[in-house]
Amino acid sequence: MGAAMINPDFAISDEDVESFREHGFLKLKGIFSQELVEHMRSLSGSQVTSPTDNYGAGFSKLKYDIGNDDPTILSLMGDPAFSAAMKQLTGAQLFFTQGLGFELEKNKSTGFPWHVGTQSFGFQRREDLGFTIWTPLTEIRAEEQAGGMKYVSKNVFSGEFVYQHINMLPGFMRNEIAAGKEIGYDDFHKLKNNLLNSPEIKPLLDFSAVEDDFEPGDALIFDKYVLHRSVPLGEGPISSRLAYALRFSSIDARWDESRVEALAFPRVTFDYNVGSDFNEVVGKADGDRVYESPHFDGTREARTLA
Image 1 (cartoon, rainbow, N blue to C red):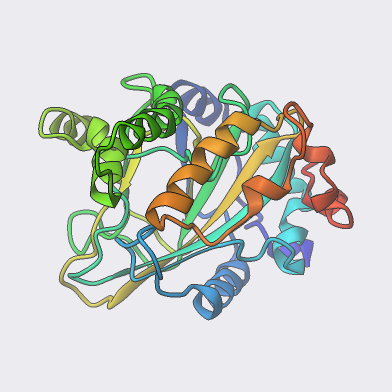
Image 2: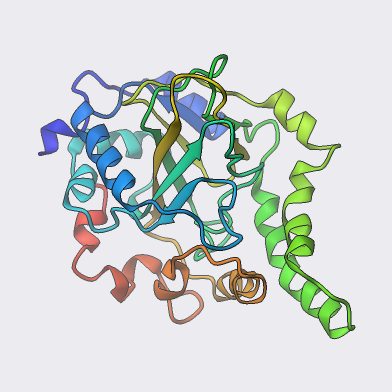
């Protein structure tokens, strides 16, 4: 199975490494075999579901924890070529944490606005390494039907501060509620998203953003500080755009109890449930090494990149 994961002619150059370290993202042209892309498509297509609450409402379908224990996805982690490429790019030993599926419907879905992965990396400390490999499962033509993503070099504007911002919200909102003010989901949504998506900042991000074309088999790797947003799928031959994302963390990452509790507040208060208890179950005490969590007993070795 290992030989079918990565295309044999895929390689990472020194220039790729330099670009990734500077900007925080890199298009991985032709990295995945068509067999793996088809498996991702089948896996995602069979499991993604329509959002049932406020989280992910911009997607026609969205689901966390897709393929977390899937044998084919785990075999990718053991592929020597894949492990070597990831080590070369990141300079760290990583392990696979979660898979996610997203679907955009033509002329309807808006996806996520400008953001960083405060939820997907909400279990670990702000300074701990985290990476995503986003794989669109249809072709993306940025100048035609679009449906991909935009992303901004962290050398231009890093999103690290957003992890601090999100942790400020629960205390502030609790204080407002205690003072007798009515705080609803719309108020939370504005506090969460308007920092990056205001009329003053959004045009600057859009102006500075990169938006690539993709073929099935191409992917985008980006670190957790890269600001990015969905690009709606416009008029054209594709009725919906499915994508699969793999999340990775450093084996040295530590569980951050305060951040996990901060993310739990909007879920309980504003029906903002991502449908995953991952952040809660991978640690018990603040500072626990996430990699050693009993949650990974039985799959830890398979999740670990060499």
